[in-house]
Image (tube, rainbow, N blue to C red; front, side):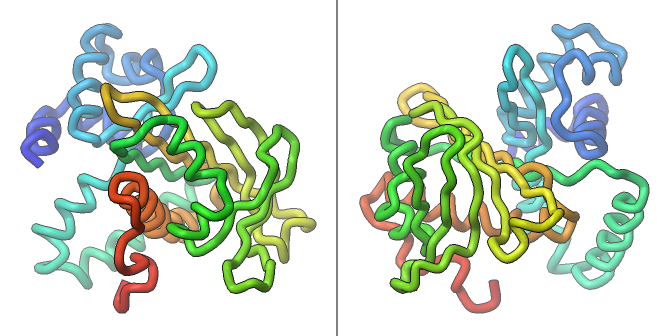
Length: 256
C-alpha cells in the first residue's frame, strides 16, 4: 500500500492513470506524447506505477501495451471510502460509467495480474487440464488446445453442459494461451465473442500470470468478470502453492 500511495502522490503518474482509464492498452510512445515527456522519463514513471501494481503490461508483437490495474485502487476504496460514503458514491459512479459508455464505442477490457509460486509449465497445465480446472474453477476446461480447435467450459455435475464455449486462437505452451469466450446459447448469433489471453511469464523464481479479457459487451459485463477472475485465480494460486484450492469457493461465499 505504501508503494500505491507513493505512486499516486505525483501528478504526472495520476495523469498517466487517467489516460489509461480513458484509453486502456497504450504503448510507451503514446503515453509519452500525452504527457509531453521523453520516453525515458515516462518509462521511469510507468515503472513506479507497475511496481505498485497500478499498471500491468502485455506484449503484442514488438509493442508493449500498458493497462490500468484497478485492484489496488479498489482496495483503497473499500478500506477508506466505501464504509463512509458507499450508497452516494456508488450512485455517482454508476452515473459516470453510463455517461462514459454513451460517449465511446470502444468495448471494455479487463486486466488482472497475479504472482504464483510455481513454474510456467505447472501454470499452463493448471489452465488446460480438465481435472485441475474442475478442482479450482468448478468447471472443466475441455479441449485438445491446438490452434483453431474448439474448447468448452463444462459443468462438473456429470451433465456435460458447457456454460462457455469458444475457439483456441493461440496456444504457445507454456507462455501464452488465447481463446474466444461465448455463451453457447448465443454463440451462433450475431454477438461477437469476447477474448481471453493468459500470459505466463517467469518472474524471478516465481510466475507472473496476466489475464486480459477483451471485447466485453458492456461495463456491466466488465464488472461481472472483474469479480469473477480474482476469485478463480485466487483458487488457482492456492492449488498450485498449497496443493489444495481454498476451503470455500470464493464465488459461493454468502453476500459476495
